[in-house]
Every structure is written in structure tokens, then in C-alpha cells.
Image 1 (tube, rainbow, N blue to C red):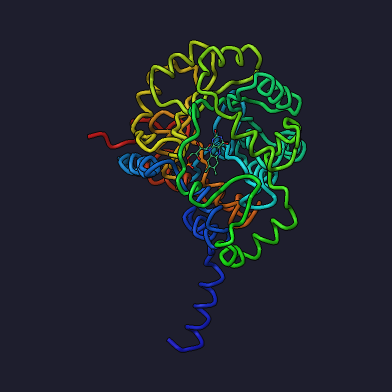
Image 2: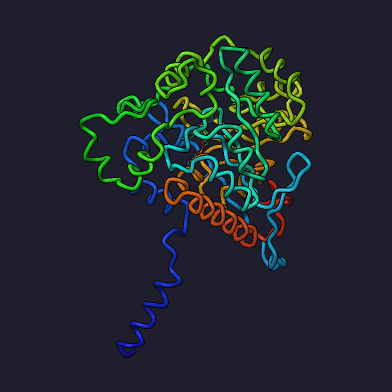
Length: 395
Ligand SMILES: Cc1cc2nc3c(=O)[nH]c(=O)nc-3n(C[C@H](O)[C@H](O)[C@H](O)COP(=O)(O)O)c2cc1C
């Protein structure tokens, strides 16, 4: 082959080569763009972080038994969740303070989710407020609530979510105390964001992130500015530390919320079949099987390990969601094969946002959707909604 032809081939290859081919590529890009302390906040988990590994390991143990010569020319990933259609079968798990990853934060993420046909869940601890996200996204929005000490704060957050048209309410129950995230403690990760003297050089090596912070200095919990007397990041940070976790909360608190919320109610952080049964008896519409992405407690099983047990514990009228360790389209299909109504992911979208803002979230959602379609074709199943245990290799 002549040199000119080789050069032509290389140019063609470079043009078709996209830097972000997988969620892991997006993760690697995010790591290059944000400071270490922010990276650790997103990537890290509680204690020795075994639960993060367990989530991945449990998914890796699930394998398919493919069938061939089925017409899979038009793989279909559309789903119906709470009676409404979803074209991109991913729920973007509530993950707080997205404005730390990128100044456009949750607003950009919600827009990307809408454009790509996915559902966005806003965390109580979001950087952008319930109202900002509600006004700026036309897509499906769910709101996640922590069981604050103050009943007044709970009621007011629920009311604000109602006023802004959020469709579903998720109550996260796996934070009786805040998990010990040791990387965050060592990095002094707190609100307001403070840069310690020893970290100056490192932060300077992330100039784009720094300039975003300078333009958007008040990184704070957008929903809580009106709740605290000071309203500034420092008093809010202190407020959250004091008020977020209330170890005395019980199922009675969930009953009260059920009476106060007419739309779909989900409970997030369920790891035990008996809790799933109790939640159903209270009248929840959905259960999110989750260990908080390993951010609360290290010594718990991976989600794919406990999921079938929990799915079996409740009736078919309850939608059961898979949350933890999803990194590829294959994982989404595995979640469905284990009986999930849909898969949820926190870190995937967060990495996309940190890597490239709104476009980065879209990239990640597109990649996951294409991989999901390819997996359907490769296992010989045309529709994601038809996937089940029959697609798995069960020795
Ligand atoms: C940076 C970050 C912040 C999070 N904040 C919240 C939160 O405010 N509320 C909540 O219920 N879960 C929160 N989570 C947990 C996610 O909702 C989800 O359970 C977890 O990310 C799933 O695991 P995955 O990251 O492997 O997908 C957070 C996760 C991350 C990565």
C-alpha cells in the first residue's frame, strides 16, 4: 500500500473514531477534568468500598444464553413505566450536587434525559432547585426525598415537588446515619467547597472546572436555601449535617408520606424482601432495590445478588427497579432479565456531566441505548419488555 493511501486510511479512521465509546471512556474523561476531591465524591463509597465492587461482580455473574436466527433487525427498547411510555429505558438515579461536576448541573442533565427519552430523578440535595429543573425541563421528572428530622421541611419539599409538576416521589430510606465515605473525610469535602492549601496546585491543573466554579461560586443545595436562616452555603452545609439523618424514622413516616402524595410513590434503598413486603403493604407503587451505589455501607451484597429475592417478595403490581453498578447496555438487559421494571444509574450520568456537560450526559445515554439494542440482537430478543429469566444461562 502506498504512503498516500495509508495516510488517507488513517484520516478516515480518525474521523470515524469517537473518543467516547463507552461509559468507562466518559468516566476517564471526567477524571481528567475535575479535581481529585470532586472525583472522589462521585466515585467513592463507604468504608472499604466492597459494595461498589459487589455491584459490578454480581452483574458480571449474570450471563445470557443467546438464541439465533430470530428477526432482530429492529430491536425495541421502549417501556411503559407507571402507565407512561419511556423510549430510553434508563432512570437517572437521584444524585446530589451535580453543579459540582459541571456548572450546568441538574438542569442540563434533566434536559439531556428528556431529549434522549429517559426519566430524570432530582435529589433533595441537588445543586439546582426543584423549581429551576421543573421550569427548564419538559421531560419526565421524579423527586427524591430524604427523611429529614423536620416534618415541616418534608411537607414543604413534597408541596414544592407537587407545585412544579413532578410525577413521582422517591423516598430514600437507607440513610439512618450518613455512611462513612472515607475519601470525602480525608479530602475535607464539605459545603461550602473549600480548597485546602495543600490542594492548590492540583485545583490549578483543572482550569476549566475552576473557571466554572468562579462563575458559579455559590455551589450549594439549591432546595434548601429558603429552609435555613442564613441561606448561604456554609449555614446550609451545617443544616444538612444536623438535620439530614434521623435514625428514629420508621415505616410510620412512610405511611404519612403516602397519605400526602397521590402520584406514584417509590421507596429507594430496599435490600431485604421483608422490607419490600412492608413497603407494598403501605401502598407504595415502586421499589428501588439499591445499596446507594455502595455509598452507605461496604458490607452488603451486590444488587444482582439480592434482586430476584426482592422481586419475588412483592406482587406484579409493584414496579421493582434495579439500582447499582449499571455501566453498559448489557447490564440494563440483565436487570430486565432478573425481573426489573427498569434499570437506574447514578454514576453513569454524573460522569457524562463532568466530562462534557449536557452533551456528555447525552453521549452516555446514547451509548447505553445503542448497547442495549445490540445486546437484544445478540441474545435473540426483539423487545426489551419481553426479556426475562428465559434469556439467562441458569446452570
Ligand atoms: C455523587 C452521587 C450523589 C448521590 N446522591 C444521592 C442522593 O442525594 N440521594 C439518593 O437517594 N441517592 C444518591 N446517590 C445514589 C444514587 O441515587 C444511586 O443509588 C447510585 O448512584 C447507584 O449506583 P451507581 O452509581 O453504580 O449507578 C448518589 C450517588 C452519587 C454517585
